[in-house]
Length: 358
Ligand code: FES
Ligand SMILES: [Fe+2]
Image (cartoon, rainbow, N blue to C red; front, side, top):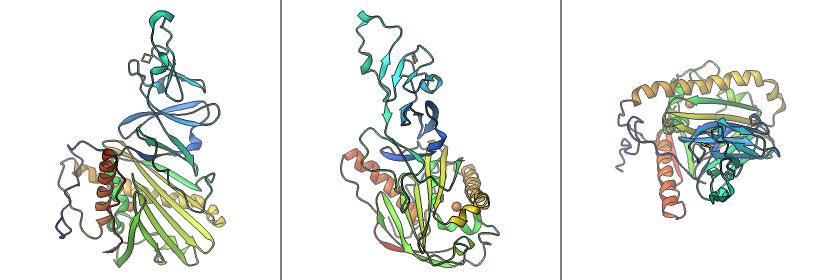
């Protein structure tokens, strides 16, 4: 690519181009506590119908939400905590997706019931979140760790939103530092005036890149109220995960934003925050309002952008503010190519400093 920093051939406007969703990655489906024992729910993930359930013993599972007989959604059937019974002809399935019983069969029909199955996907639950690995093979990596917090630690604050835009644009919006002065104008955050030059050091990390540990501007109110000398590190990882870790003395605040595609036109955004600062818990109702307002500003912007994307315009990713967005497309393409070729993933990101004005 010419180094004019302007061309972005990989970017589709999201109009007519068929979406490509990443497989073989962990997608976050929100809080595990929402899924009660012996219950199941149907949802969409990356254009696939997914049945998410929790068995009698408390283990979560995920199946393709289509009966292999004649396609009825299994989530419309009945679940007794052990088996799911399809609502149409009563075929029964274990939580591993294997068929266990076909009511209409006679013994001499010679059908191997146990060979009939609907695909099952690996599920993990950690840090209060539920993750599904959409892939055909055994996972080659695990969902992200939340540094400094036990796997049993639930988020102190959690919110979810649906963004009415293609997933790639939701992810790039997450990585885009240049929209902040326009989109996140707010009395508690910043006014949108007084743009400052920023320089941040980045390096490659697992399936993504990291804005290396640094001392952020304590002028922003959000950091300022935490006191002490904050240090922050921001990790991005496929498919659309941004993990920010702030250390203030012995305390930590970790924020995870996890974006996953619902279908070609919408994305699920889960935003979770963990903290060790006791007095922050007292401020939770206020923080919830601010966090919701912040995320909703992005949601509204994505919906506005989609009105233009309908016309499938060619788009630009300019240096350096859009370099993270460019890396996202490169990482995604490399993940797909390396999986297809059965070779190790080669991270396209090199250590560098990016500079922009925000
Ligand atoms: S469609 Fe499910 S049992 Fe027939
Ligand atoms: Fe934003």
